[in-house]
Length: 343
Ligand code: TXA
Ligand code: MG
Image 1 (cartoon, rainbow, N blue to C red):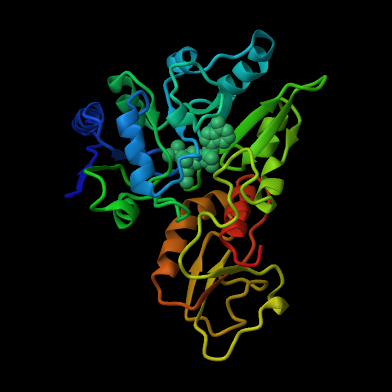
Image 2 (cartoon, rainbow, N blue to C red):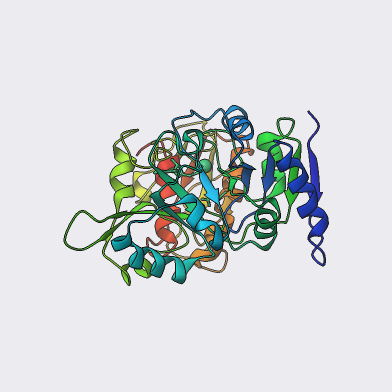
């Protein structure tokens, strides 16, 4: 199949939006830009189209999808018990539109294919202006996982989508690099106790600290990374987000014992400063997450781009240096652990 890459015109989104909506209405898949990573979109009310997502990604169909909606579509897709509404609404008010996905009880509008038979659905209200227009004009939620093959690295540019899915999908809407560069924060709610608790299933751009202002946050993602498959967010399989080249996260440089003749590349945090790993080995290539010396938001934007670059550099192994585990650094470390062969 021929894959068209259509660039968004910054002065006028309409061409891109019209084209995307035409394909979506025709039960076709469209790779769409978002503020987190590129998504592989289908009309969420069209099972034939949603089925294609699983086929194209080689994704097992017990792994549910995120639906992308406008705030005013919320009532059609989820049904929130009265006593839970205040907390959920406060959180939506604070972070949406944006890079936050909420797991909520679904309505009958959402098919079992989308939710993988669960009685909940993952909902995100994106902030990306082109994606928002697409959803509005389609008049239906857009189901979209990240636009990569199952267990591969999420794409943060149209070029990366093309590398993953070129020839398998008809249309990619190109709106440049994604602002956040890592997938949305995913939360669910535990209302079983005296006080509600937020379960963080996947760390992302909305941080633990920001959510703690609303309720205590349980770091469910830590356990999920260990308990392979037996998890609430089935996407949290151990090997996920990984490059094809083996990657190893090394906390102390002394733990790095290079083997003779092996070609090692370094994913450095800040690059050339005293404590960095850059000078301690004759690396075949070095990529720096934050050339501005430890800006985590810069590191997150560059993470998947640099992992793709290192993956294409003909290395035997990628050594990753840890980043500060605060704010979006929690998400970066989560993705590095999941990509790493020693976790
Ligand atoms: O930023 C993002 O979230 C991107 C963009 C495109 O929106 N999407 C994304 O989708 O990362 P995906 O499919 O790669 O990851 C969605 C995760 C999966 O791990 C899935 O298992 C989990 O959400 N999930 C979906 N529905 C769920 C549910 N009802 N309960 C628990 N986890 C769910
Ligand atoms: Mg994904």
